[in-house]
Image (cartoon, rainbow, N blue to C red; front, side, top):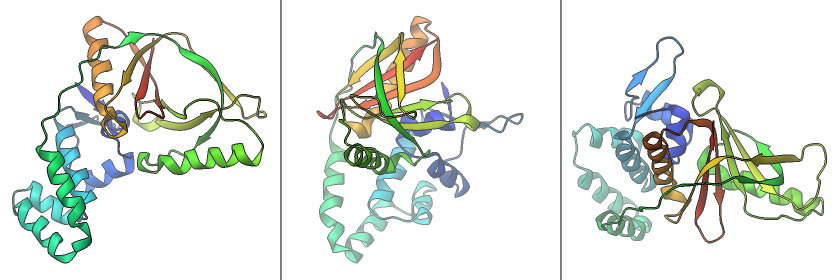
Length: 244
C-alpha cells in the first residue's frame, strides 16, 4: 500500500517540509514519483526508517550524522556515545529513549466502527503548520476564546483535506465552541465515517490510520480524502475517515 506525501506525513506524525528535507538530504526517498503530476509516494515499510530518523533527531544528531548511520558508514552507538560526552544534559533523555527502544509493545487490536462525526460549531485556523507545531495553533484558538469571551466546548481536533492529492493538502486546526462566533464560525458534520478510538497516545497515531485504511480495504469501503483527528484529554485519539 502506498501513500501520498501528505498521507505519509500524517501517518508518521511529521510535517511535509520535513519529508521534503529528508528526501533532499538522501535520508528517506519516496518509493516512486508520478512523472505526470509530480506526486511523491511512500509505503508502510518506510515508517520504521522515519521513526528512526525522528528518534535520532530528537537526541540532537544532525542530518549528516543520521545519513552516515543509515548508509552504514558509522555505527549508531559511536555517534550516540559522542553526543553523551559532549552534552551531559542529554544523558537522562538518551537513557529513557534507549529503555523505550528495548520494550516489547503489544500491538493494538481494536476494530473500527461506523459512526458520524457529530455536528459541531467551531473556530478554526488554517496555517498548514508543521504537525510538530500544532500546539501553537491550538494556543491561538484558546487565546481568541478568552479574548472574545467565548466558551470552548469539547476537545480540539485537526481536519485534513486532500490527502490523496499532494498539491491540495490542507490542515485545519479546530476548537469547538458553544455559541456562534461570527461569520468565520465553521459548522462541521459528517454523517458517515469509519471511526477508531485509539489509546496509544498522540505520537503513535499512525497506527490508527493504518488500522482504518487496512480495514476499509479488506471490507471494500471507499474512503474520501477528508480525515479528522480528535485529541482527547485522556490522551486517546478519535480518528474519523469520511466514507465516500
